[in-house]
Image 1 (cartoon, one colour):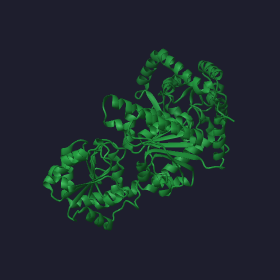
Image 2: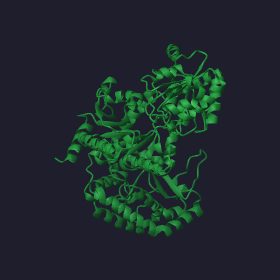
Image 3: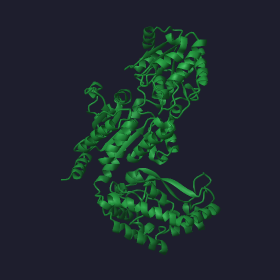
Image 4: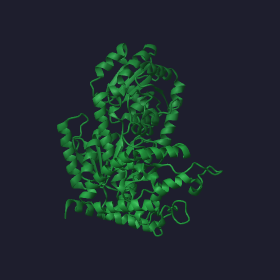
Length: 612
């Protein structure tokens, strides 16, 4: 039995319930596990065979955290080192190859690049990466280009991508890292939410911490928690603190976190004569104690995924003064749970710190609202449930498709994509004048937009944005609902659909890799839960511009017969079959057959399988 056959057999056994399905979580730092993933990993251990990859020397890490799983200590280092990074990639490759994981989930940039590369090379069926902030967001030139390219590679090697905040998702889409349909956000954002039983207002802890720090009751304690780097804005905070301390003698600053860029001397110098009112702590296993003792959490960062420390401080009833950047704007409701300032604007930061330091009632109202919002939108149990539900949905979808034998010969693995790229490129160049003419006709007769865009399920049901020429008008009934297709389909629309000219922009989807020239047609997202397990297997291959069902009757066929033809194609992919379907497609278009179902303007809605 070959390695691929063993993988299919072992995964098949797990899907039938004989064994737990295997999940691997890949992170670079032990701190990521301790700070964000403990509750999630504990919840996963009862459902899955769990492996955690992390750069640690503590072989008892998982046991200490109460997690029943296998620890794989692999040296994934934050700094770039070609030799060490290749060694880590090789270790990950061997782990993935030998373990036959059903799902791999990576977080943080370096772990994402190496983890997704190893999972892609070993054909792990489900590969998820969570983006938690972009190193390149503050870079310029070649450095920015290279680091951004790494994120593009991660997104392309993953089968699913997540952002840990809505505004970060918008940033990544705007920067072209992934499309809107290909990237999601679980809940309101964050990796693991906030444990409100741990991060909570506690007067006893507050008093004890302030006593240990030598901070009096009437003094205002500003707190920074995080890595000491320039990107975190710690030098800006030091300069602003000096100005605030010049006016407010009752202000103190505590800085907690590892000094990764040896900035402590520069921070001390920036604080000037008030450095004696600043305290540094390299690390802590109990950030909640510092937060309970603080009055204001400061995060003047230049880049963040979501600003988890802000949410944790909010759980303790502590407001934030932070920079107005993507990620942080999801963690702070400006003027309600905290105050924001432009990133890098020390004067604005000083103004906000003075404002909140002078006004005890403002601090209290912001802190109370921050706690309420943390309880409402970021409880850890909700985020854990969202992750488990996400895993379950993906694994069940894959299980429903796995017993379909998809043809994976040379053509299926390599030749089909090469064929798609070659034909789609030449077709776009050859048909460019026609595309321009059709665009003009649609613009003149139907108005804007010229193109119709809609989320459709692609390979393994993963959403993508399908592009077609628009063929329907925007007409609505008295309740604001779109009229039936028959009432919105114009004469021009009928010509476009009858000649299949409306499908030509899908060549762009083929070039992007969302579609193939030949494959099951991409239907609607709402059809996914309506399929029987067998029908769902049509998504085991990429959707196509045309397919076996289209050349065998198109919309004239009943849904069940179309789906059976899709399944036959998925199990018998070959170059000759694709060439035959493309030739028959040309004849179907010329003959104008199967454009609509009998008695319908286009096609009747699929309501669900007759037998489930």
